[in-house]
Image: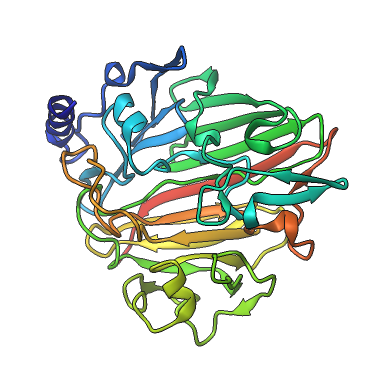
Length: 373
Protein backbone atom coordinates (compact mmCIF):
# COMPACT_ATOMS: atom_id res chain seq x y z
CA UNK A 1 0.00 0.00 0.00
CA UNK A 2 2.81 2.46 0.91
CA UNK A 3 4.51 1.85 -2.46
CA UNK A 4 1.26 2.57 -4.32
CA UNK A 5 0.74 5.79 -2.34
CA UNK A 6 4.27 7.01 -3.03
CA UNK A 7 3.96 6.23 -6.77
CA UNK A 8 0.62 8.02 -6.96
CA UNK A 9 2.15 11.01 -5.17
CA UNK A 10 5.04 11.19 -7.64
CA UNK A 11 2.68 10.95 -10.62
CA UNK A 12 0.47 13.72 -9.27
CA UNK A 13 3.40 16.03 -8.53
CA UNK A 14 4.98 15.74 -11.97
CA UNK A 15 4.24 18.38 -14.55
CA UNK A 16 1.53 20.34 -12.74
CA UNK A 17 2.77 23.71 -13.97
CA UNK A 18 0.78 25.92 -16.34
CA UNK A 19 -2.01 23.57 -17.31
CA UNK A 20 -0.05 20.31 -17.45
CA UNK A 21 -0.58 17.84 -14.62
CA UNK A 22 -1.13 14.13 -14.04
CA UNK A 23 -4.39 13.07 -12.42
CA UNK A 24 -5.06 9.94 -10.39
CA UNK A 25 -5.35 6.68 -12.31
CA UNK A 26 -8.74 5.01 -12.46
CA UNK A 27 -7.02 1.61 -12.20
CA UNK A 28 -5.82 2.48 -8.68
CA UNK A 29 -9.42 2.76 -7.49
CA UNK A 30 -10.68 -0.56 -8.79
CA UNK A 31 -11.51 -2.54 -5.66
CA UNK A 32 -14.59 -4.02 -4.02
CA UNK A 33 -16.65 -3.76 -0.86
CA UNK A 34 -19.22 -6.45 -0.09
CA UNK A 35 -19.09 -7.59 -3.71
CA UNK A 36 -19.74 -4.11 -5.12
CA UNK A 37 -17.22 -2.45 -7.44
CA UNK A 38 -15.54 0.79 -6.38
CA UNK A 39 -14.40 3.00 -9.26
CA UNK A 40 -12.96 6.42 -10.05
CA UNK A 41 -14.60 8.87 -12.49
CA UNK A 42 -13.01 11.88 -14.15
CA UNK A 43 -14.67 15.14 -15.26
CA UNK A 44 -12.87 17.73 -17.41
CA UNK A 45 -13.75 21.11 -18.87
CA UNK A 46 -12.44 23.41 -21.60
CA UNK A 47 -10.40 25.44 -19.07
CA UNK A 48 -8.16 22.47 -18.30
CA UNK A 49 -9.67 21.83 -14.87
CA UNK A 50 -10.39 18.33 -13.59
CA UNK A 51 -12.61 16.82 -10.90
CA UNK A 52 -12.37 13.17 -9.88
CA UNK A 53 -15.01 11.26 -7.92
CA UNK A 54 -15.62 7.78 -6.61
CA UNK A 55 -18.86 5.90 -6.04
CA UNK A 56 -17.63 4.79 -2.59
CA UNK A 57 -19.54 7.27 -0.47
CA UNK A 58 -20.46 9.33 -3.56
CA UNK A 59 -17.41 11.42 -2.84
CA UNK A 60 -15.08 14.03 -4.30
CA UNK A 61 -11.50 12.76 -4.65
CA UNK A 62 -9.66 15.54 -6.51
CA UNK A 63 -10.35 19.10 -7.67
CA UNK A 64 -7.58 20.49 -9.90
CA UNK A 65 -7.88 24.27 -10.32
CA UNK A 66 -5.43 26.96 -11.53
CA UNK A 67 -3.81 29.58 -9.29
CA UNK A 68 -2.96 33.18 -10.12
CA UNK A 69 0.01 32.01 -12.23
CA UNK A 70 -1.92 29.34 -14.10
CA UNK A 71 -0.43 26.52 -12.03
CA UNK A 72 -2.87 23.69 -11.27
CA UNK A 73 -3.11 22.15 -7.80
CA UNK A 74 -5.50 19.67 -6.24
CA UNK A 75 -7.50 21.76 -3.75
CA UNK A 76 -9.44 18.83 -2.27
CA UNK A 77 -7.91 16.73 0.50
CA UNK A 78 -8.18 12.98 0.01
CA UNK A 79 -6.45 9.72 -0.89
CA UNK A 80 -4.72 8.19 -3.89
CA UNK A 81 -6.44 4.79 -4.08
CA UNK A 82 -9.76 3.13 -3.43
CA UNK A 83 -8.20 0.90 -0.77
CA UNK A 84 -6.87 3.97 1.05
CA UNK A 85 -10.42 5.31 1.40
CA UNK A 86 -11.55 1.96 2.79
CA UNK A 87 -8.74 1.96 5.36
CA UNK A 88 -8.78 5.67 6.32
CA UNK A 89 -9.02 6.66 9.98
CA UNK A 90 -10.97 9.79 9.04
CA UNK A 91 -14.11 8.58 7.21
CA UNK A 92 -15.56 11.84 5.92
CA UNK A 93 -13.10 13.07 3.28
CA UNK A 94 -15.15 14.42 0.35
CA UNK A 95 -18.12 12.12 0.81
CA UNK A 96 -21.89 12.60 0.68
CA UNK A 97 -23.15 12.58 4.27
CA UNK A 98 -26.61 11.45 5.34
CA UNK A 99 -29.32 10.36 5.66
CA UNK A 100 -28.90 13.18 8.15
CA UNK A 101 -25.79 15.35 7.95
CA UNK A 102 -24.61 16.76 11.29
CA UNK A 103 -25.84 15.68 14.73
CA UNK A 104 -29.11 14.34 16.13
CA UNK A 105 -29.38 14.50 19.92
CA UNK A 106 -28.94 11.08 21.56
CA UNK A 107 -29.68 9.57 18.14
CA UNK A 108 -33.39 9.88 18.81
CA UNK A 109 -36.41 11.56 17.24
CA UNK A 110 -40.16 11.07 17.26
CA UNK A 111 -42.06 11.01 13.96
CA UNK A 112 -45.76 10.23 13.59
CA UNK A 113 -45.85 9.17 17.28
CA UNK A 114 -43.06 6.61 16.78
CA UNK A 115 -39.69 7.02 18.49
CA UNK A 116 -36.69 6.06 16.38
CA UNK A 117 -33.21 5.20 17.63
CA UNK A 118 -30.13 5.81 15.48
CA UNK A 119 -26.57 4.58 16.06
CA UNK A 120 -24.59 6.64 18.60
CA UNK A 121 -21.29 7.48 16.90
CA UNK A 122 -20.34 10.94 18.21
CA UNK A 123 -20.20 11.10 21.98
CA UNK A 124 -23.81 10.70 23.12
CA UNK A 125 -25.21 11.68 19.71
CA UNK A 126 -25.61 10.36 16.18
CA UNK A 127 -23.73 12.16 13.43
CA UNK A 128 -23.79 12.06 9.61
CA UNK A 129 -26.35 9.28 9.33
CA UNK A 130 -24.75 6.83 11.76
CA UNK A 131 -21.68 4.62 11.81
CA UNK A 132 -22.66 2.98 8.50
CA UNK A 133 -24.19 6.03 6.84
CA UNK A 134 -24.13 6.97 3.15
CA UNK A 135 -20.39 7.63 3.33
CA UNK A 136 -19.76 3.91 3.94
CA UNK A 137 -21.91 2.71 1.01
CA UNK A 138 -20.96 1.82 -2.56
CA UNK A 139 -23.37 3.80 -4.74
CA UNK A 140 -24.66 2.74 -8.14
CA UNK A 141 -23.65 4.74 -11.19
CA UNK A 142 -26.73 6.12 -12.95
CA UNK A 143 -25.01 8.35 -15.54
CA UNK A 144 -21.49 9.16 -16.72
CA UNK A 145 -20.19 11.75 -19.19
CA UNK A 146 -17.07 13.88 -19.52
CA UNK A 147 -18.69 16.67 -17.47
CA UNK A 148 -21.18 14.89 -15.16
CA UNK A 149 -21.58 11.76 -13.08
CA UNK A 150 -24.77 10.77 -11.25
CA UNK A 151 -24.67 8.32 -8.35
CA UNK A 152 -27.78 6.58 -6.97
CA UNK A 153 -28.47 4.61 -3.82
CA UNK A 154 -31.52 2.98 -2.23
CA UNK A 155 -31.40 3.33 1.55
CA UNK A 156 -33.82 0.67 2.71
CA UNK A 157 -36.42 1.02 5.45
CA UNK A 158 -34.71 0.69 8.83
CA UNK A 159 -31.18 1.27 7.56
CA UNK A 160 -29.23 2.91 10.41
CA UNK A 161 -32.55 3.21 12.22
CA UNK A 162 -34.22 5.56 9.72
CA UNK A 163 -37.78 4.92 8.47
CA UNK A 164 -38.77 4.51 4.83
CA UNK A 165 -37.18 3.29 1.62
CA UNK A 166 -35.28 6.38 0.50
CA UNK A 167 -34.21 6.59 -3.15
CA UNK A 168 -31.25 8.95 -3.50
CA UNK A 169 -29.50 10.61 -6.45
CA UNK A 170 -26.44 12.85 -6.29
CA UNK A 171 -25.18 14.59 -9.43
CA UNK A 172 -21.69 16.12 -9.71
CA UNK A 173 -20.94 18.27 -12.75
CA UNK A 174 -18.08 20.54 -13.85
CA UNK A 175 -18.93 23.66 -15.83
CA UNK A 176 -16.68 25.65 -18.16
CA UNK A 177 -16.80 28.42 -15.53
CA UNK A 178 -14.90 26.15 -13.12
CA UNK A 179 -18.02 25.42 -11.10
CA UNK A 180 -18.48 22.18 -9.21
CA UNK A 181 -22.27 21.78 -9.19
CA UNK A 182 -23.81 19.26 -6.77
CA UNK A 183 -27.51 18.40 -7.04
CA UNK A 184 -29.24 16.11 -4.54
CA UNK A 185 -32.60 14.43 -5.20
CA UNK A 186 -34.59 11.97 -3.09
CA UNK A 187 -38.01 10.39 -2.62
CA UNK A 188 -39.44 8.13 0.08
CA UNK A 189 -42.34 5.77 0.76
CA UNK A 190 -42.54 6.75 4.45
CA UNK A 191 -41.99 10.03 6.28
CA UNK A 192 -38.30 10.37 7.16
CA UNK A 193 -35.74 13.04 8.11
CA UNK A 194 -33.30 13.99 5.37
CA UNK A 195 -30.35 16.36 5.37
CA UNK A 196 -27.70 15.79 2.70
CA UNK A 197 -24.35 17.52 2.36
CA UNK A 198 -20.82 17.04 1.08
CA UNK A 199 -17.87 16.81 3.48
CA UNK A 200 -15.04 17.99 1.22
CA UNK A 201 -11.95 19.35 2.97
CA UNK A 202 -10.70 22.29 0.88
CA UNK A 203 -7.20 23.74 0.86
CA UNK A 204 -6.96 26.41 -1.82
CA UNK A 205 -3.19 26.29 -1.66
CA UNK A 206 -3.38 22.67 -2.70
CA UNK A 207 -3.44 19.51 -0.65
CA UNK A 208 -0.33 19.14 1.57
CA UNK A 209 0.51 22.86 1.20
CA UNK A 210 0.07 23.48 4.94
CA UNK A 211 -2.50 25.06 7.23
CA UNK A 212 -5.71 26.75 6.09
CA UNK A 213 -5.54 29.31 8.92
CA UNK A 214 -4.31 32.01 6.51
CA UNK A 215 -7.32 31.45 4.22
CA UNK A 216 -9.77 34.36 4.38
CA UNK A 217 -13.47 33.62 4.88
CA UNK A 218 -16.67 35.59 4.31
CA UNK A 219 -20.02 34.12 5.39
CA UNK A 220 -23.33 35.75 4.48
CA UNK A 221 -24.89 35.21 7.91
CA UNK A 222 -25.99 37.42 10.80
CA UNK A 223 -26.75 34.49 13.12
CA UNK A 224 -25.43 31.09 14.14
CA UNK A 225 -26.97 28.21 16.10
CA UNK A 226 -25.25 28.05 19.54
CA UNK A 227 -24.51 24.62 20.98
CA UNK A 228 -24.83 22.84 24.30
CA UNK A 229 -21.98 20.87 25.90
CA UNK A 230 -22.59 17.89 23.54
CA UNK A 231 -22.58 20.13 20.42
CA UNK A 232 -26.34 19.97 19.94
CA UNK A 233 -28.08 23.28 19.10
CA UNK A 234 -29.83 24.92 22.04
CA UNK A 235 -32.65 25.97 19.70
CA UNK A 236 -31.73 29.63 19.86
CA UNK A 237 -30.21 31.86 17.19
CA UNK A 238 -27.37 34.08 18.39
CA UNK A 239 -26.04 37.15 16.60
CA UNK A 240 -22.50 36.84 15.27
CA UNK A 241 -21.69 40.43 16.29
CA UNK A 242 -18.98 40.55 18.93
CA UNK A 243 -18.13 36.86 18.53
CA UNK A 244 -15.40 34.89 16.69
CA UNK A 245 -18.20 33.80 14.32
CA UNK A 246 -18.49 37.22 12.69
CA UNK A 247 -17.30 36.65 9.13
CA UNK A 248 -19.53 39.32 7.59
CA UNK A 249 -16.26 40.97 6.62
CA UNK A 250 -13.61 38.63 5.24
CA UNK A 251 -11.07 37.56 7.86
CA UNK A 252 -8.33 34.92 8.13
CA UNK A 253 -9.60 31.69 9.68
CA UNK A 254 -6.75 31.82 12.18
CA UNK A 255 -7.46 35.36 13.37
CA UNK A 256 -9.79 34.35 16.23
CA UNK A 257 -9.79 30.55 16.21
CA UNK A 258 -8.02 30.40 19.58
CA UNK A 259 -10.12 33.09 21.30
CA UNK A 260 -11.33 32.44 24.84
CA UNK A 261 -14.89 31.72 23.68
CA UNK A 262 -16.83 28.76 25.05
CA UNK A 263 -18.51 27.81 21.78
CA UNK A 264 -15.12 27.58 20.05
CA UNK A 265 -13.75 25.38 22.81
CA UNK A 266 -16.58 22.86 22.34
CA UNK A 267 -15.33 21.98 18.86
CA UNK A 268 -11.61 22.57 19.45
CA UNK A 269 -11.94 25.32 16.84
CA UNK A 270 -14.62 26.19 14.30
CA UNK A 271 -17.36 23.57 14.06
CA UNK A 272 -20.54 25.62 13.85
CA UNK A 273 -23.64 26.16 11.73
CA UNK A 274 -24.38 29.60 10.28
CA UNK A 275 -27.94 30.74 9.54
CA UNK A 276 -27.62 32.10 6.02
CA UNK A 277 -29.21 35.41 5.04
CA UNK A 278 -31.55 34.22 2.31
CA UNK A 279 -35.03 33.40 1.11
CA UNK A 280 -35.84 29.77 1.85
CA UNK A 281 -35.01 27.26 -0.92
CA UNK A 282 -33.64 29.87 -3.36
CA UNK A 283 -30.11 29.49 -4.68
CA UNK A 284 -28.09 32.27 -3.08
CA UNK A 285 -24.55 33.36 -2.27
CA UNK A 286 -23.42 31.83 1.04
CA UNK A 287 -19.67 32.24 1.44
CA UNK A 288 -16.30 33.15 -0.07
CA UNK A 289 -13.04 31.37 0.74
CA UNK A 290 -9.82 33.07 -0.44
CA UNK A 291 -6.18 32.04 -0.28
CA UNK A 292 -3.89 35.10 -0.61
CA UNK A 293 -0.83 33.00 -1.49
CA UNK A 294 -2.26 31.14 -4.49
CA UNK A 295 -4.85 33.81 -5.34
CA UNK A 296 -7.55 31.14 -5.57
CA UNK A 297 -11.11 32.05 -4.62
CA UNK A 298 -14.01 29.68 -3.94
CA UNK A 299 -17.54 31.13 -3.92
CA UNK A 300 -20.28 28.97 -2.39
CA UNK A 301 -23.92 29.13 -3.54
CA UNK A 302 -26.68 26.97 -2.10
CA UNK A 303 -30.40 26.40 -1.73
CA UNK A 304 -29.80 25.21 1.84
CA UNK A 305 -30.61 27.42 4.87
CA UNK A 306 -27.30 26.83 6.67
CA UNK A 307 -23.61 26.23 6.21
CA UNK A 308 -21.39 24.33 8.65
CA UNK A 309 -17.84 25.63 9.06
CA UNK A 310 -15.36 22.98 10.22
CA UNK A 311 -11.63 23.67 10.33
CA UNK A 312 -10.21 20.15 10.47
CA UNK A 313 -9.70 20.36 14.21
CA UNK A 314 -9.30 16.61 14.67
CA UNK A 315 -7.12 15.85 11.66
CA UNK A 316 -4.08 14.34 13.38
CA UNK A 317 -1.64 13.09 10.76
CA UNK A 318 -2.76 9.47 11.01
CA UNK A 319 -4.09 9.52 7.43
CA UNK A 320 -1.70 9.77 4.47
CA UNK A 321 -2.88 12.07 1.69
CA UNK A 322 -2.60 11.75 -2.09
CA UNK A 323 0.87 13.30 -2.19
CA UNK A 324 2.59 11.07 0.35
CA UNK A 325 2.23 13.52 3.24
CA UNK A 326 0.22 13.11 6.46
CA UNK A 327 -3.03 15.06 6.75
CA UNK A 328 -2.39 17.24 9.77
CA UNK A 329 -4.60 19.39 11.98
CA UNK A 330 -6.28 22.29 10.18
CA UNK A 331 -4.89 21.50 6.73
CA UNK A 332 -8.42 21.44 5.31
CA UNK A 333 -11.60 23.42 5.82
CA UNK A 334 -15.19 22.23 5.26
CA UNK A 335 -18.04 24.48 4.16
CA UNK A 336 -20.94 22.03 4.37
CA UNK A 337 -24.22 23.39 2.99
CA UNK A 338 -27.10 21.84 4.92
CA UNK A 339 -30.04 22.20 7.29
CA UNK A 340 -29.35 22.77 10.96
CA UNK A 341 -28.28 19.98 13.29
CA UNK A 342 -31.00 18.20 15.32
CA UNK A 343 -33.83 19.75 13.31
CA UNK A 344 -36.12 16.68 13.75
CA UNK A 345 -36.17 17.56 17.47
CA UNK A 346 -36.39 21.33 17.02
CA UNK A 347 -39.68 22.30 15.32
CA UNK A 348 -38.68 25.98 15.20
CA UNK A 349 -35.90 25.09 12.72
CA UNK A 350 -36.58 24.72 8.96
CA UNK A 351 -38.35 21.45 8.16
CA UNK A 352 -36.26 18.36 7.33
CA UNK A 353 -39.05 15.75 7.13
CA UNK A 354 -39.63 14.34 3.65
CA UNK A 355 -43.11 12.93 3.08
CA UNK A 356 -44.23 10.26 0.59
CA UNK A 357 -45.20 11.89 -2.70
CA UNK A 358 -42.76 14.77 -2.15
CA UNK A 359 -39.44 15.24 -3.90
CA UNK A 360 -36.33 16.37 -2.06
CA UNK A 361 -34.20 18.77 -4.13
CA UNK A 362 -31.07 20.61 -3.07
CA UNK A 363 -28.31 22.37 -5.02
CA UNK A 364 -24.87 23.66 -4.09
CA UNK A 365 -22.25 25.29 -6.31
CA UNK A 366 -18.56 25.70 -5.50
CA UNK A 367 -17.22 28.23 -8.02
CA UNK A 368 -13.44 28.53 -8.37
CA UNK A 369 -11.67 31.60 -9.70
CA UNK A 370 -8.61 33.78 -9.14
CA UNK A 371 -8.60 37.10 -7.30
CA UNK A 372 -8.40 40.18 -9.52
CA UNK A 373 -5.97 42.05 -7.25
